[in-house]
Length: 410
Length: 140
Image: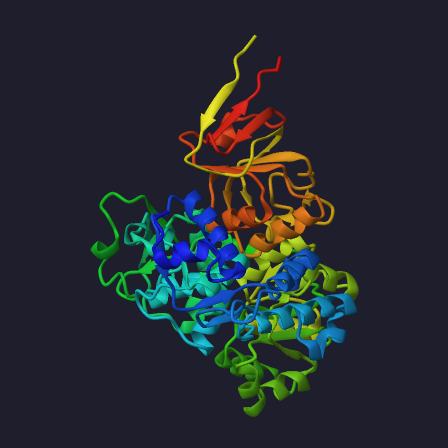
């Protein structure tokens, strides 16, 4: 990689050991992808739940904080993805003291590094959405695909160590979706079904993700009958990223880089069609039987509007099964103030903030609580939790709430 | 006696390693697909479900899923439960970032479907600096 004067100084250790090690890591990644140079980034977003870090990752972070004064701070606004717990609900989740200790140590380390603990995977709804052509270093696949596709920003999937490195150096290797040529569509998808429910939007994204199948695939999509809302695109993109590792899609006439098909699509792209039948088949692929142990709304964290809709469904109900609704620390106070949290909890549900269910020791929670059959309206989470020993079922928010009342998904 | 077969990759990282290939035309995500404590593939729908990846060189189609793998490879390395190396048809940045932090060798980008070219259980050598994977003949 070609380095400028400042980067040469970093690599030589003249700006301290932290930026030196961060740049070395970035060069290893950049060399792998044949990046020509670095590109400055304006924001970084770090996924770093402690289930992923483990003791080894937490110690690695703590070692970073031992750099000298003035040499251990991030250089650009650097924020965090959901944490591994909501401390106020940890006992309810059956989380152990050891898990919480790791969380506290991680938070302490990040604060010493100057990282802002936003603990959210919906920062594009709650903190600051990136703008078109803004180069950023975002973690959380759902954040990246939304930022790239809906906002027109430029980011690769940046895992925690690389996002932190970008925060420390203020740059990232110029490869992947930082390059205009990689943002052109590689497949053309015509949809013949415009969903209404969030679970259907997620399932549609999942179907397209499965077709696309890898990180470098960029679907351009036609056929939607209306412009989706932010929450709909949130579930659509998060599921596409989860099922297909996709980081960018274009919606013709809707997303900013695709005013017309010709703007992003070279001639002769492979063509695919996704129908209502495909979306229904994806739902059926997860259905086991009617009995459920728990209902979870999470992944991505719920917006204020989603909590409003959920609260409206909960009036006068009494849940016989646990129902968890997970949101961001920014949305939770508003949900409390509007009475949405109280409405959900009056029915027997639990509103959690600053975590995400699958990033919070979901396997251990299943064992501690005896939860196996899980109902959700998140296509992303059904894709993940199969590997954690759950039998997830994808259904509408309404059906999930009914299941919490009856113990059965109809 | 048959000769070794050599396949060339476009991308490579890490040190040379030799071992037994665990092969499937399926994806890889440390969070979605693995029981990282037991060291086995745990997602029921994965082609390698129930099989151990310990001391094996994984030969798979592509890296999928979430950003957690970047941390998880580092954590797995601290307990000695990573695969010996990764060989992918294509890879996403997360696995590359994770392999860079955990120092796990990796190759990606072939002109053939590498999961079809290497038989499960083959003895192979991954040389990231030369960007090659060598399938040893039975006599090697």
